[in-house]
Image (tube, rainbow, N blue to C red):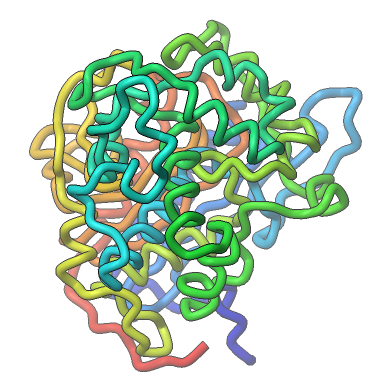
Length: 397
């Protein structure tokens, strides 16, 4: 059977140094979560040592509400993975940093001069990467019908007055991607999607990831649902309303929202993290990043109580990282884990300690507490399934 990466045939867990019973326990837990209504549908993909040992698809991509036509999730169904998009944006900046086209300590305004208006001149690229720029645009985020107009996005960034002093940890839901994408455009002369496709996704064999698509494509993307019983706000935005209204709109799905609109499936998400746990080397052996760059971006840079979510947060450069104490990566010693959540339904992550690369993509959201209850036991079980080291095979896509 031919290999169609990243949806190649599964290999035995033992070939990846994993205990089959524990891996199956994690898959059974994912099925049980879907069956009890935690999410309408989803995918779970596990990779280790260059091998795919699980690629599970369950439930409904669309049709959870009665007025909608039903469509089942398949392994190839693409989802909007929301803020799980942010690491790809960060990796574009890493690419420019390695090429010495940007410096993280430099002000954003060195590359995007108009951004300096209204007291933003000292905010650096590193501040934005670590959510310490203090620039939040709740008014513009409510105006989701304008997100497809990039000139309007840039104008909103220029007009923005910082909500918090520079250095304050305040998670930037959409602002992260908007600011950094404009930096990429100013430095390279091309939009972030084409830059990522050429410099990152094509070399890694990940053509199934994209920031945009046609309206026809959008009609096949899994719908997002709010399944929680209470409203949840991030800064001044009621995401319990927005996740099922604006984010299912074709106008938003087809807009370029770089920090919150990547379309992908769990297999591609896991394969992206496999590149990083391999130290920046692709499946074909091409080095995309120096290992030191990967380690710098995926290490903890900031820890504190995030003003936007009002929760403790460990942040790297565009990644959410683990900690010595319990986190959503598990109940024990998660400092080597790095990745990013998407809304309250999705998580892509890698683990430097075990070599795991995992994509968990669903379409049901119920808030941060539900996210912890769902993802922590899944990831703890997957990490415990890694019972011996394993080397990556020499494979070509």
